[in-house]
Picture: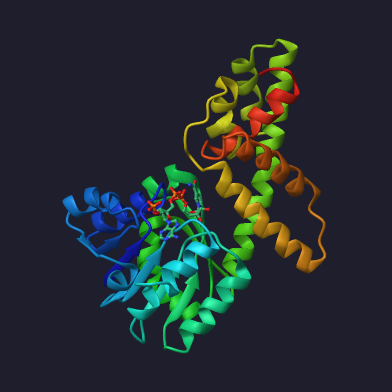
Length: 291
Ligand code: NAP
C-alpha cells in the first residue's frame, strides 16, 4: 500500500516512523521541511507539497493542528485534494471541527475520494508505541480497507458512525480529560498546601477509585511544576472550543469544559500555550498561592 503522510509534528512524526518500520512505502511532507529529514534517512520519500504527497498514494494520512490548517493542506496552494486520485482514501487523524470534516468529505466525494475522520487519543507516548485509541467516522467498508494501517498506529480502532462522528467522539474525549486534569491538579494542590508527603499521597490514591491516565502519567509534572510536551495547552484549548461549539449547537451545557477552557485561555495569554496541558495545574497552584 502506497501511503502519503502530511504533518510530522509531535504526533505525526512518530506515527509516520511506525508506518515506515512496518514496511510501508511512505512519502512524507511537512510544512517545515527539515522535519522530514529523520524519516528520509530511514527510507521515506520526501514530497515538496501536500499535493505531491497525495499523488500516487492509495491512502493519504494527515496529522495537522487545527481546522484552518487542514483546509489549507487539502484545498490551499499545492493542496492534497489536487493530488488525490479517484478511489484513494484520505485518513485525517488531526483533531478538527466535525462540521468542517463533513464538508471536506462531501467535497472530496465529488472527486471519488473517500475520507475518514480518525482522530486519536493516547498522547505522544501512544504515538511512539502504537497504542493510540483511534475513533473513526465515515464509511465502515472504507475503514476495513485501511484498518491494517491503523492497526500499526493504535491498539483500539473503533468505528463510531458516519462522517464527522470520529471528531464528535474526540470532542467527548477532550471534555472528559479536561475535568480529569483539573480535578487531579486540585487534589494535588490540596495535598501540597496542607503539607502532606505528596509523592506518598500520589502512590496511595493512584491504585484506588481516583486512578486515571492523567494521575499516572502527568501528576509528576504537576508536583514539579514543570510541563514538558506532551500535548500543547493551546491545542487542548482548541479542542474544547470545538466541543463547546458542538455543545452549543446541541443545546448541551458543559460548565466544567467551559471553566477549563477559561483557565487555558489565561495560560495562553501568560505565555504558557506551548507547555503540556498538565500546566492547568499552574493555574490551580497559583490560585492556591503555591506559585
Ligand atoms: P504539533 O506538534 O504542533 O504539530 C502540528 C503539525 O501540523 C506540524 O507538522 C505542523 O507543521 C503542521 N501544520 C500546522 N499548521 C499547518 C498548516 N497551516 N499547513 C501545513 N502544516 C501545518 O501538534 P501535534 O501535537 O502533533 O498535534 C497534531 C494533531 O493531533 C492536533 O490536531 C492535535 O490536537 C492532535 N492530538 C495531539 C495529541 C498530543 O498529545 N500531542 C494527542 C492527540 C491528538 P510545522 O512543523 O511546519 O509547524
